[in-house]
Picture 1 (cartoon, rainbow, N blue to C red):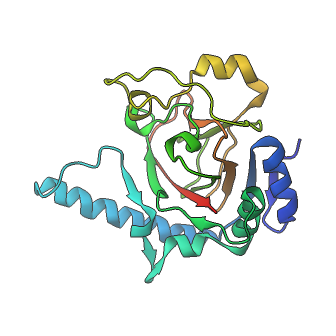
Picture 2: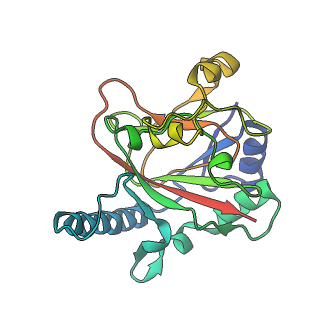
Length: 235
């Protein structure tokens, strides 16, 4: 089963993989220099925000997220740099449009193995962001998946939204909001052979459907935070 593609591979082949398996990994989708510029802009944003928190001017950013529309490189919005011809072709083929648009609910996100709100459980973006077909172009801003958290996906075309656990107010955001899928159910229904957590390099892109089940991948010995982008595309 081929799940990984070089950036010069056929967009139709990538889209066909996503249609069958729910996900495809594009190696070297973006120039490393561009990803580094975006990461630097995100670091500057968080630094300014943390300084404002220290001055008592705003509350802490509990979820360590940034609206992608707030990030730019040399005055150019990051989302316009990331929706490349390749990404547009692959996403468009998956959701049936020639011009997929970046959804406003696209974010830069920080993940950390020790912070519950920064360690996402199994969920589907289609439940979090209701309304129409959806493709997520997940973009790590650093190498990840070995020493720092990566992403785990269920390699399967899931036709709709899965049942979720009851909400628990004291749990993390996804469990509290009734969006977490029971990990035991995931293991039982799909088995370990369908749980994929590749190692990523800055510049890679993991494209998956709004119904694809995924979570933060954390393994023993991992430490430190990871920045990534959820670039969500719709009709």
